Length: 295
Image (cartoon, rainbow, N blue to C red; front, top):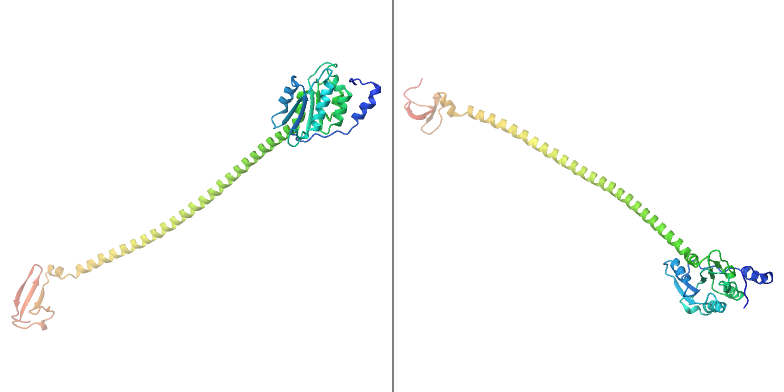
């Protein structure tokens, strides 16, 4: 087994420089399908999943040995398996995470091996290495496309863009809602103002119309009132005139009305003859008379 410690010796440094000089593969901006290489019995898998977040990730876990005499072969086989089985999930694995918890330098030897470095280098899938604690740096970390300090940090690295996108969506959603609230409030104020203008104009027109009708009716009533007063005076005057010319009134004043036997009023002496029968009417009745002489 070829083991490279963190303090690689000068004879192996040229080989390490070859791996480190490669152009790194970029992680997808928003990965969904993740391959996970770690031991199913360790805390790394739990910490990774916990901090990955709830963004609908599809995690395909392959159990591998992360320490011990067979760990190198197990890790290399796991890397190759994901690369040789792109159909393990729809649309394929987009990111491969190799992780384990912290430990002694001896327990991390598999991740300092040239075989693991070669497998990571040859992977067609971008690799995130998250081995040990933050102070632990392995050759696998250096050769991988992205280094995460811990399994927890690996979860954050994978979901970072999703979290930022979520923040932006929330920010723009809140901003949009605030803008809509502001726009709705402005439109409501505008509509309230316009409605007030419309109702003011409407009631002003109604009031003006009623005033015109009122003054029109008032003028008609005034006109008829004047006519009634005028006609009343005319009737009163006519009544006075009628009373003034009423024969009965004259009779009451001592006058008498004389008619011949034909009922014709005697107006002059020329209308009567001696011995002519006449009817004399006074205020309280009438009586007959005979003409005996003419003066």
